[in-house]
Image (cartoon, rainbow, N blue to C red; front, side, top):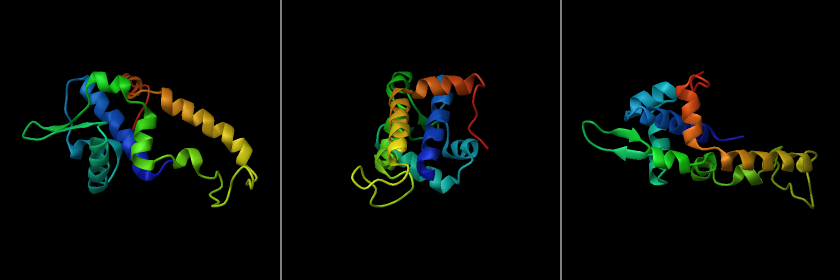
Amino acid sequence: MFSRACEYGIRATIYIAGESLEGRRVSLKAIASEIDSPEAFTAKVLQLLARNEIIESVKGPSGGFEISRKNMEKIKLSRIVSAIDGDSVYTRCGLGLKTCSEKHPCPVHFKFMDIRESLRTMLETTSIYELSLGLNEGVGFLKK
């Protein structure tokens, strides 16, 4: 459903938020290890997230990545998806066809519309803060 970059972006953001709640900045190496992602690819994803003001990059010897608590509560999953994948998750055909539309629907078009709307609602109402709390409480995990 999401691109690999978007999956890593969501996982990285949740991990950074969880560490930020504990007052820690995290390094690229720690993030890549924790989300089970190649370091070079993770660096590109983190650049995108920083450019879109989803995460903060702090330079220097005690630098790393962080997210302020205030921003965690404002940042919804939809913002990460939009920054990395655009709106394709809401518009792409459920079967991957190029010409699928309401006038020329694929076999799952109308059923997939309901799923897409539920997904949009979930992405627009789920904050990074709530997900990072669950991670810190051991309710979820980020590594395979």
